[in-house]
Length: 162
Image (cartoon, rainbow, N blue to C red; front, side, top):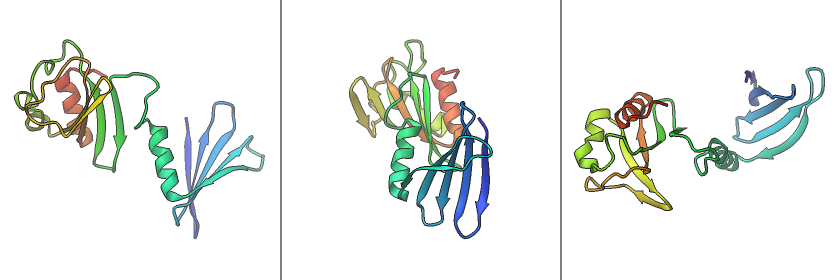
């Protein structure tokens, strides 16, 4: 996938994304926050406006699209970038993970990696802001906050190779 970026003086930025069918998705982000989405069927064709979103709605849709609410394909890790220095990552514990069966306090996650476990998804339950006494179980999905390096260190500690 190729993404082209260009400045639109006095308007904002334009991003063009090559799609699998040879067309392009064109996204115009206005300085006001408004987003307009277009589809250009071919290189010489005019763009067709698909829809327009407010800044708030675009951010909500973007969060949904990136998979923060639902991941259709189960993987060991999922990440949400908050800014250039911080991200939230979802890491699933396996049966053979060195953290399985230990408490958060005993695992020393923050001291060893710098990442903080901010929630645990256990079946249909979410444990928010888990305390040190929280025992980790296989199949728990740990939601951690940290820099990319801290989250990578955390994944290595958990035994996730992805």
